[in-house]
Amino acid sequence: MNTSLTMELYNRLLDCYGEPRWWPADSPYEVIVGAVLTQNCAWNNVVKAIANIGDRLDPLFILNVGDAELSGMIRPAGFFNQKAGYLKAVTRWYQRYNFDVDIVKAEPLAKLRGELLSTRGIGRETADSILLYAFGLPTFVVDAYTVRLNERLRLDAGKGYDDIKRSFELNLARANHNNADVYNRYHALIVVHGKDRCHKKPACVGCPLEDLCGYN
Ligand code: SF4
Image 1 (cartoon, rainbow, N blue to C red):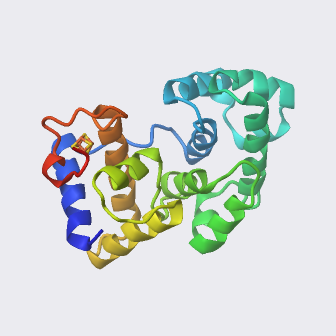
Image 2 (image 1 turned 90 degrees about the vertical axis):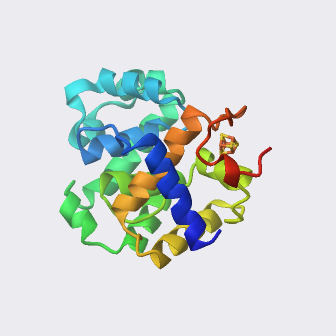
């Protein structure tokens, strides 16, 4: 993938779908919770789980509530016993920074990412989602929609998570767009595109990327 293609995709998706509303959450901590709960789970079930927690959605509540009670509240998100443990683990990580966004953001991104990846239940996509969407730090999120787009458009951005992430970041840096706002918008647009038409069975007619795509 080269820089001009990276920007062409971005601009076409933005022209087609407009400014995406993303990530749906009222606080950075809610983003963290949502990023854990959405693992292997449709977003509407995450919404139900978060609604069950309600106005108790606070790091100290999550740390202190019993495991069984927490599992019960997040049951709609699936894998609820595991995810209850993951939520407590990532909340303990946040506690190291006194639950303070500014203290987190003062730390080097690579250090934070390494800490999150060492946290129980936090993989690369979840770690990058937390860093980008909760804390506004510039790390590109790669998800299943990004991998699919890479394959279908034959972007040649690499095969694994890290290769694809590096390719997007490198090309956005070359275009002077290596900032969290662009990373946020770009990933959100890829998700919107994946949900809107680039499904497993894609709706290619009228796709804004059709002439660039090798799928058909
Ligand atoms: S042309 Fe089809 S396969 Fe290619 S990006 Fe568009 S919807 Fe996806």
